[in-house]
Length: 257
Length: 321
Image (cartoon, rainbow over all chains, first blue to last red; front, side, top):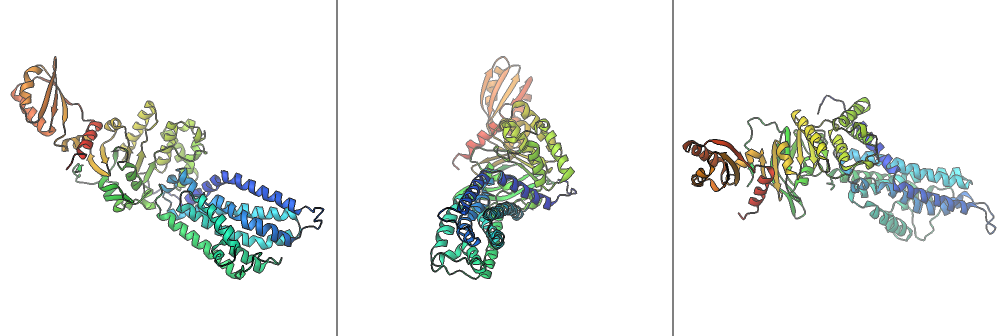
């Protein structure tokens, strides 16, 4: 190879980023996520319509407590994140195209970081876009609700993406593990009394909301015992960085078949 | 026993493999392999499960040796620095086949850090080299197996690597295409590149490869040129075709030579000999021809092909020690 040629590592990482972004966006996950988001939107519209037995218009408090906290934070957010993040590396692996990325002269941690950035951008776009559309659909206090939920949703998305990409770097069928985690750990254990739920992302996201929300959000299960909002935020930041670093380490050492 | 050709005085190896072993749990895929690969075409030959793919993965930095070390242009093969010198064309058809051929090659140029005009120039250049320029705008998923192989070759060549590692590159390519690609490999070799070709088609390696690596059961059975390997095999049963004026008359005295195991006569002028030790045979036969004043028309070893040597090495490897 002619060593005098100028090659840019940044440009190579940017290529990994754009390739990942494109492949993830034009994938089956986008169809599934699109259907789920459409369903959530329909449910929210039906919920927001004043019915004869409930003629009062919906309030921002109801939107935060009944739709965003339960439907969106509890189900949609982890599902959207796992849809993209868990398939980022494992889809390249099962499609036998990972070899082309690993054959380049980009250090493995940078390949991982570029893929993470692409998946995060896509997932953040969808989760925040969905949050906005759900709030705007209802109308009442939507800007205030949006303002409160946006930082929590953004940080929870970062944490979920970092965690599910770690799964993706670690095992071949990462989506199954991520689904099992989302359903068993995030959904079940996050809603039972006790300390087990402290290993879930949703616990810290909810704790943050309960502490700072002006809409009077409260846990609907006994002995929930949320941590302080500031603590929850720092735990989410630390967990995101930890999962990202661990994912980079696993990816840089693992021998993929 | 491993047979290796003697090292040259001046080593120009791009690849150095030193005492490499690779384990997958209890399975030993490679067992203490040492070899060097320099410019020119090297054929990697072995049956399924011999360890060829494992060796290629180690050379391209896809996996790490359990023991030993592999260096590409002085860098450890696992590291990114080494990969800048290696172009890899993996076995199988998988690639990002939703892209067009041209776009795929352009993306690969980007992955190697080339941008703008340089990336475009390289893309067009390698497409031209493998004869895909006029078909590169179709999506890769619509390509035949041969076209996919060519596009994969483009991906391997885009950064002008010093070492080109090709896993069954001629698989699925028609005879005309094979001829063109073989010519391309020879051109690359003449330009000073090291081209490592893993193949099951042993006959092709006869004409193509300067150097052969025979691998079986994780061991390097032999390495060197076919002639060198054959010469090193002192008990290799060579078949020799002799044409002369009076074959019947010399058949009987030929049997008296120590190195000759059998003689069959095929009138009017052909003799087929099975000899035990090629080196000793050629020495003995020279003296024999002079003594008996033989009018020799032709003397040719008939089974020096890679396949014949490989079959023999396999058979020898399976003998109890």
